[in-house]
Length: 154
Ligand SMILES: [Zn+2]
Image (cartoon, rainbow, N blue to C red; front, top):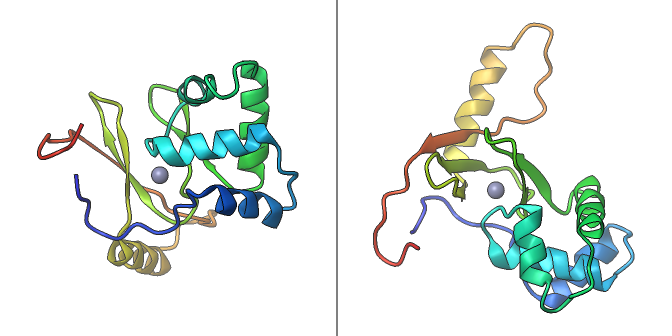
């Protein structure tokens, strides 16, 4: 499926992953590397379980607790973001830049939606319509709907 808007920032290479850890002042550990790589490769806003499943072949001894701990560290350092769905399952996002989400209510699939025009409209709207007693830090839309299968969409 091809989405409108352009994709930005996908650090998929091993070297880039290592660099991004170093840049944040984090120690490069095999677990951190593997978990980041899993998130970028899966590219579907995976749950901790999906990540664990992905890395268990290369890191058979890794404990669930370790995965959660690493995810917390990576989130705290803004290398990844948390995404909460209405099913209350925490998922993880490898794209930390400003973007929105298309959420398939049936499939629970989440796809990134990047659209600068929309961002401008939202920014402009809230500039003109400030919310009383509330300071906006970011606006992230979750657009609910149904993915219509076509082409090579899985
Ligand atoms: Zn996302």
